[in-house]
Amino acid sequence: MSVEQDRLELERTGHRAGQTRAELDRAVHEAEHRQGEQKPVDQPQKSLADLRKEAHAARSEVAATLDAIEYKLNLPKQIRINTRRLTYALRDLGDRNPGALIGIAVAAASAVAGAVWLGVKAFQNR
Image 1 (cartoon, rainbow, N blue to C red):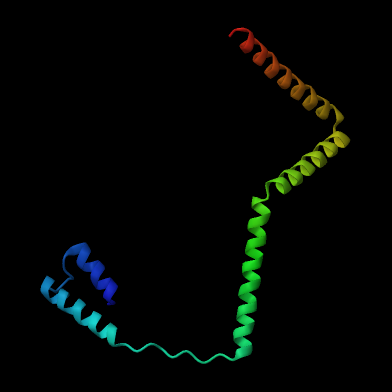
Image 2: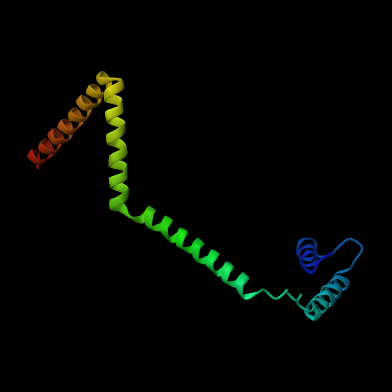
């Protein structure tokens, strides 16, 4: 059992099956002491070319991330893109079904007229 598992078991139950709390505390302390004595694993030395390749890949990844963030947060560009999408969708709808496009235009005009009328009435009732 690892040190972390021993700690979790101690916190959960107060003891591990077959062990008293004092025995478990002692085992955890010994495991922590042993863990502190472990030597780090030596990593193989990387060549300068490998390090440069990793740095280039990391820079490319950061640049791509920054480009994505800029794309999402550039509100004028997003408005322009969404306006073009809406325009294309309405033109396509007008080509496929002109009656539906006329209905949408009438509904939009009615909504605007209704909003203006409500605004004028609210202003008059002040």
